[in-house]
Length: 200
Image: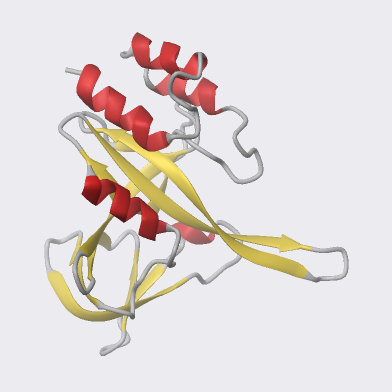
């Protein structure tokens, strides 16, 4: 549990940390690349699904369709990322690939944080750029992760509905979130409750 708290404390302190530490990139064909990598967001719109992972040595560019996992080695620890298929709402038909920081790995469910870069433009072209983290849960029996937390533009609205839609196999969890026994914006507590009390 202590490791989870430490991990969560550094999630929002840095962007995806490629280029700062040595990394290992595992491609979808199973091959591995080790070295220094950087990350590039080529467009403003939907940027987190269009990431390029670029080798600093060879300048080779990899899209998220070509990458399955990334490990960033830090001084005393490492950060583990996975390319996940995600959807915003449980019933969405469309999915997209995103690079998710593995915040919790369980036997029944995993929790990922995806960093979104938000561009807020003004009427005369002046805007702000800031980072926002979105939480995705993925049951180990499923192939797609679902957003269970904050969504840019909608804020915290709709979180309880997304929890009800995604966790239909855990009535007590739904009740706990509905009556605020578990705070709706505490995605880690939601996932930990599911891991300990629900699922097969």
